[in-house]
Amino acid sequence: LGASISAASMSLTGTLMAFCGAAMMALMIWCYLEIGKRALTQSIRESKMMRMLVMLATSNWVRAGLVIAFSPVILPMLVISILNQRVRRMRGKTTSDSLLPEGAQRVVRSLAFWNWGTIFIKINYLVMVYWTLFIGVAKATVVFLSWLNEQLLLWDLGAVIAGLFAIGLFMFLLPPVPGVPVYMTAGVVLAARCGALPMGFWGGVSLAVALSFALKLVACCGQYMIGFCLGKSIKIQQLVGVDKLFMRGVERVLSTRGLRFSKVSVLVGGPDWPTSVMCGILKLNLFQIILGTTPVVLVSSPCVFAGAFLAGGPALEQTGEAATDTSIYDTIASSMLMLSVAVQGGSLLLAGYFIQDTIAQHQEELEKHRPEHDAVVALTNREAEETRAYMEVLEWQAMSLSDRGIILTAVILNLLSMGIFQFMDEATFKNFQVYSSIEESSGKGGLDGNAWSVVLWLGWVANAMFFTGCCLHCVFLCIIRKKAAAQLQRRQSVRSSGTSVQVMAAQI
Image (cartoon, rainbow, N blue to C red; front, side, top):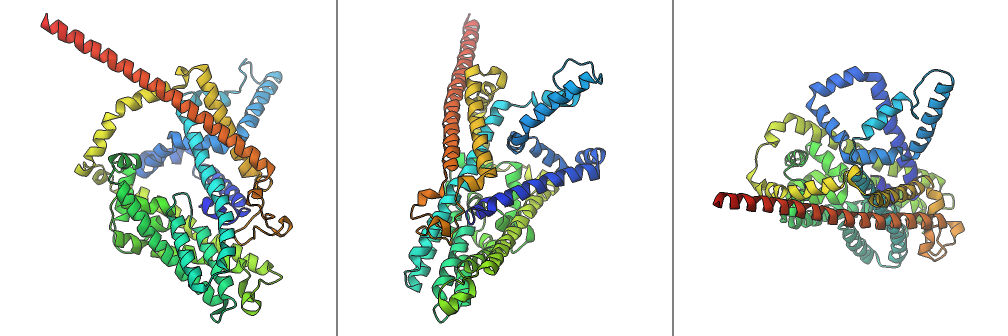
């Protein structure tokens, strides 16, 4: 969701991410204080859904996310805890020689049981996903669509529509590209192009709404076919977990016919490419999937309106150019964009609820054996020994000092780069929008004719830190995989030797 906004506005995404993070933190604190520890513990014991949520919350992926979220305050909290213990010792409140107070010691002891090798790898993967969606693809998409706007305005209306459809479809078929900037571009281009024509500004907006809606449905068909072809691979089925409880719950929700609210929530709230591709991998009914996707017009239309008002609003009908005072149009555009965010974000939250509710209500049925998944289960069983050897060499105590240094350096560099991108956005990238012009001067919101100038000097530093961390991460993975293969080979050699001894003993 944040990636969609990031690809539409370079200035709004930081505010949105900060707001969502603060809201989630406040919600968790409020739930704990309002409900209480005892009531939460009892509900976890009695509710299947709560137990599943707790299992999810204790996974290494969630732990990696928590480390990323709290990374800015880990060092200050550690320093404060040490100072607190020293002050308590000076005041005679404790006689312990420990560096940390008892509460902090309990936290450290619980953290010692975490598999930090695996968690550090997942931290790097999450930062890579963040960079791909919010930095790499998002910033490049904004610059490309800005250039595209200028080019399409020179074409005839029919060619503009065909060009927008073709380029939009191509972008939809790329995994990291969200739909919001494509919808906004349609609004910007068609509103500006039709403003001086008889159909006028509102005719252009209506045309952009229809084009965006049709483009989304056609793109869903293309994404579905990508998933359908990928789903023929047993390895792909294993990677997405078609035999797992959660994915079977998703399949049950999406298998319903018509416009069921739960089904629509998943199809509209889920990310564009993964959702439709997953439907293809699961080989669901394509017509029913397209039917369930039709309410996406509630997400695409506000984005089209946002782009149209950013292009200059109804003033385009009289002058063919944007109004001099665009403050009211900018406000309307921001409101429309946030409305789209609210619809998609609310749908995503409801999708999570409906999936977990379906799993809780039909868990026994979903856990039943399904013959079509036998090949996936067999592949998982064959790879179990390799996975076990891999996890063993990832244990923190089993790693050499050099291996620990490599992965720690990679994590620190990636977290530092992510912090710079997240909290110093205005110092890393220029505030460039899809309706801006690359050829304009920087004082007017342009890039002085150089697309690369969108990256400021601090942005180059942060990118260098990120790519260095990624290289170290790859080096670490190569080392670990070689060690895991060697350990697996030793284990198989010992097993073969034991079998040979048993055969010889039997012959004697």
